[in-house]
Image (cartoon, rainbow, N blue to C red; front, side, top):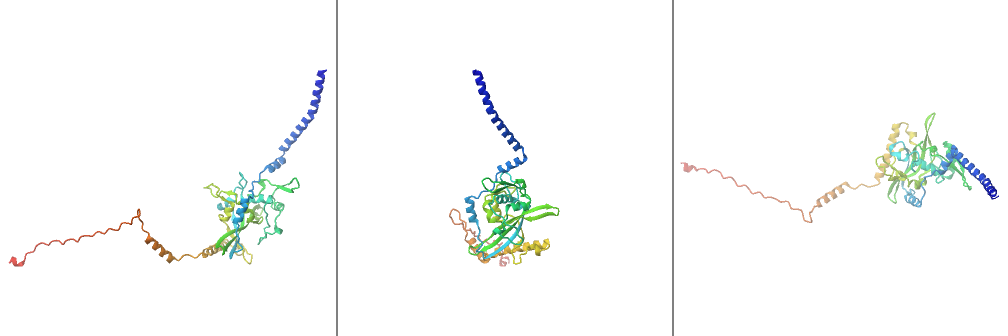
Length: 355
């Protein structure tokens, strides 16, 4: 009887455990199928993908306030528009790497991710002027649809809205091969400062179509909004010295890039291409504007009088006497030469004696 009792207890235990084991096995098989599904794989990769966007720290905010240039009191200012070609070697630090590698990203990838996380705002690219008012602010979803950027919408739990998941390979960082840079050359008379301030930048997307390669400016972005983020991003500026001693903000603030003038702010709102039809006339006009900027900067400082500088230099050179151990230099010795004695002439006989 005891054997039958133990057998009955063992059978009841197996009957209760078997459904639970079957349920766990079914869940594990379902998870395995989800991992093998390409869609599930993509979603899990995007969810676990790190943003790597630089955070806005308190130090970065304080540095941004310190580096902000006030041009409201400028007595002279000239606004210049330049095109920065990223295919040139001097501008390569803003273009490479075209895909994130070891937490390194180029400028457009940083801008794109900041827009996706709603940390900065972009504004419509208007032909002829820029308007940074809320009425011209660009919606991120409209930006994705306009430039045919693939994305996936996901609902954030807890009523957090909609999140746009974009793979790194779908970010058009490789197609953005140039930037429009709007800068202000100004002279502040109160502080006696002549400097250049970067006002805004606009990425230019190059799209290869049936009609050839097309240039499409994407949006305008105030530079002050992204400077706190890019001021902490180190970049390599030389193929010989691989030490990352500069940041993206240094590249703009120190004007280490090379850009061609395409427009100056004027009353008629014309760009150079409208009145310079040939490449030669365009080059001459660009050189003329660059020369005007250089001449104005040099004319602000009065050069020293060359006669005064020469007189002071001669006076200093005469007063410099090198001494050895505090002793006066040896006087120049003069040697007195003894006068040579006249040679004795041979004795001559008197005529009287000869007679």
